[in-house]
Image (cartoon, rainbow, N blue to C red; front, side, top):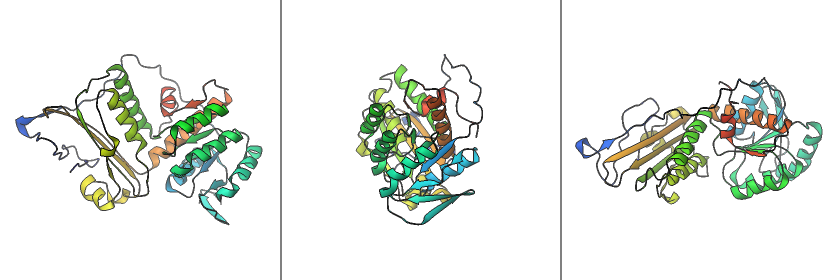
Length: 327
């Protein structure tokens, strides 16, 4: 059975797969990422911004965390959000703001009024996977720049909606700053050393809170990099852990973070089982994603106001521009 190491444990995970790697039977290589030869010039942090931000999904834990991070960063939280169900007379308290929750039937009318009242607004979407495309089409129809933090949905259709409307959007399967940097390093390795892991066997384990219904977008992105590196992988083989007991006993998630965590393990083994590589990143809580999402909204706001010719971005664009605040 695959097992993850808790964040504070440095001993190897007890992997037992196609062959034993004990003793002289194998050698485990641990590699530290080296800085690329050509590094970008450091960009000074941008001036503090203040603009309206609407967080769609304040009834969920992730959306609520983003709303709290936005207000702490000095942004003006628009007191409106939406639910997948029609819910009357419900509000969510975020700091000193009472956010009114509207059902799907009122979404277009309410958003239209928001455009008139807050023409500078940026929308952040943390709703349900099956709402991704409908929400994006509506944002594009109304000309609302948006940050899509929700994973799932038809991603090709999502990009097409933005392209066809000439709207601004930042779309990323991962909003955590440091994880974004890891993904960037993986993409650089895949581009510069295609086929470097040809013939290697890949196993992937990911663990998230039970409420996460879709497959980890981060895992998909990392696997895509490994495929460019020559690894063949069937997504149906991914081990997805959503059971709290397994997360505590097998994965090593701290009990206080069972309801909010993201643990990923990627294990590569050579064809003869003599060499293995392991990549792991564990996140407890939601602050890393919330802060990264606020960075994304600030980045997108600047791009809209500079009338940038590029219209669709991801978090790597934010990273490359040096637009990540120190948190």
